[in-house]
Image 1 (cartoon, rainbow, N blue to C red):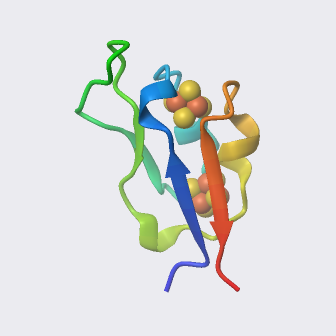
Image 2 (cartoon, helix red, strand yellow):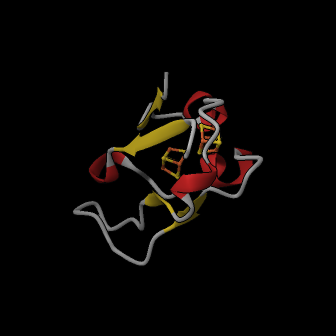
Length: 71
Ligand code: SF4
Ligand code: SF4
């Protein structure tokens, strides 16, 4: 079971990919969907691999990502 869970506010994402590149475990990717601002938001492609390390949330310049840690 994943140790963490990422919550991404897709409407606020600007597709900069910093979170995708920051994740050491390849959890995130840029999705094929488009938000109302015309960007492809980040999404968790492999949520089962998330460790809850929060690197993605720290890297996001717009604080779009929240990470919940499994207890
Ligand atoms: S919390 Fe860590 S493991 Fe989970 S998606 Fe973010 S960077 Fe990757
Ligand atoms: S770092 Fe933030 S704004 Fe950039 S792609 Fe990831 S969630 Fe979107």
